Length: 98
Image: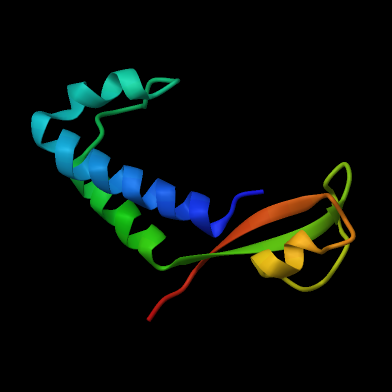
């Protein structure tokens, strides 16, 4: 289950990537991708992704395997998801706009 802690680590890694690697050009990033990106990675993309993730909150949704039926009609918080009767949880990223 993706947690708030995981999201914080992703945000920090993205910030490091943006601040420490972007100034050296897009070629520096190639070894870090399992599959090559289509087109050049631009600093503007990283900035927009950082802004998007800064306003993102995690929620969870119970589903019935194989993943086509929703088990509950409400999004769960991390605490609720940990005590959910179902072990099948989808991670939902909510982008909150000011």
